[in-house]
Length: 228
Image 1 (cartoon, rainbow, N blue to C red):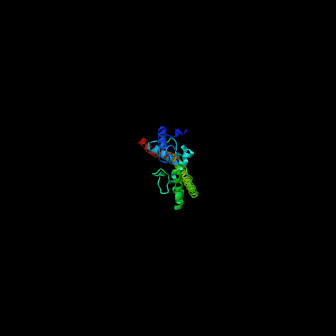
Image 2 (cartoon, helix red, strand yellow):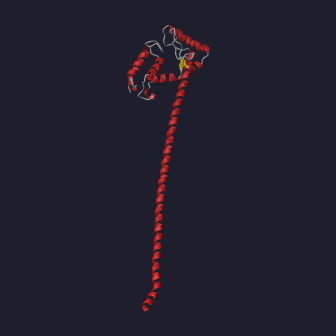
Image 3 (tube, one colour):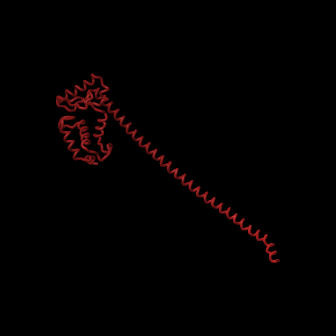
């Protein structure tokens, strides 16, 4: 799928991208940054934009990194979501967990390095060794947490599917039992009907003998009448 085919409104997406790119929020005007990419995605959705693919299917590697970056809760050491200061300089932006792994002195060291270099017009300024290590640890933990979350979702889906299949098998088994019971009842009814019929035939046979006995007993009466 072509990149623009992922968006339900490619024109709106281009408009938002240009506005964010030329703005001074999240980075210098005309320069791109991870912060600007995050702002662009949020603004596109805010204006009614959506996507033609699922989040996983439509994401490029860069977008996946951006998504992880968002989940890592990047911020300044003070906890602000804005790195740009009023005087135009920029503060260090790191995952919340990375800041938590550093001492106050280590936080100041990497933050001052970013501020001082940004005064010279540099947008990308490397971290101190401690900050770099803390950032890697935070990113690794975030990936592991995301993997666990995805695996948990997959397990839930498997469990639901297993439960559905179990119910379906139980339903089929119940239907078979009902059918078997119905056939058995029908067979019993037929057998019982046959027995009743045989009994009826026996009674009819027994009744047919009684008139013969009566006729034999009445013969002397008839002879007496003739003699009179």
